[in-house]
Image 1 (cartoon, rainbow, N blue to C red):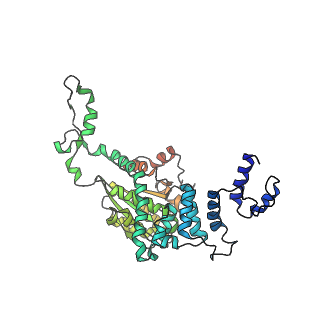
Image 2 (cartoon, rainbow, N blue to C red):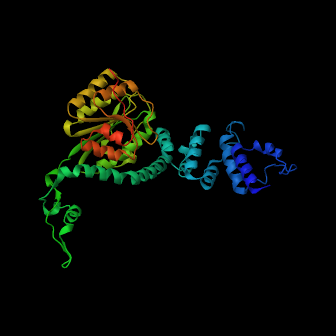
Image 3 (tube, one colour):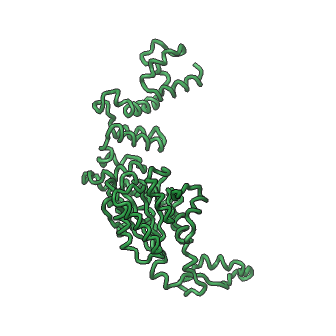
Length: 401
């Protein structure tokens, strides 16, 4: 058999499963007398891959979760060895869904071997109250691993964007020695470098005003819907909240809500603890959440309020609109993010989104990669609908009268 033909049959065999073996007898180039018609097609590693896929996707044909259910430690080891990481994430997610393998997330020995991704993280957080005591620490370490990974990817951009947007407000040309920003000072005076003496003469000193170190320049409130559909948004908001809380130039609060409101601001120094304080699922009362935000906002004109929700209001939608309008009139810069995730724009309450847009509230979905730039634009009081258009983000528009 030509090599190309054999490789094509091999791939079809792995895709279609064991049932395809008899069909392969139709090819005269194969050995008709072999007990396994596709024996020559599969290598040892192919057979391990085939077994792992069969145990997962052929479970219904083999009679449910009896003897055919995979031995999880071995199965997890096999898929991590023979599949790339993105495929491992898909297989693990399907195992929890198709085989109802809750023990994958409830047993510490198994949990420690899982390749954690956003979907499994949100499932784990949803199950956190059901975790046995001996699993809790393992669960925290697994969650921390992914959170730290996301922080490494996103934290620097967040810090630079926010600091850059506020630096013009805090900079002074007559700083005290301890307040000099040496990096900016050197850059501003490079043309005064004396080559012969190898000396830089700083004609202008740039630094930060001491008085502004005692209080934040701006206040940021992240108000996040913790219903099940917003799970990924909760995770990303928690990470960004922790990064923002580390910056002295801003004061940050993190508020999550369903039908109740929980202020998790005191946990912002540790996003893992913050996530374990979240209760995913439940109803939605946005009006109640905005009411709480009104109470904690002390400087409306210096406050950016980011409401992250799909706007499926279970409370009083009329009063919710009125409360949003009151916040905007008081000077609060209110932004509504329909999602803060990589999945794009979710299903959302179109009517309520249009009502918010009519109040001048920018309403759209945002990816984690763009969120730092969004916050920088908000802190600079830029037109966020224009900013969104520049980044090819579709914003909700007010209904035509």
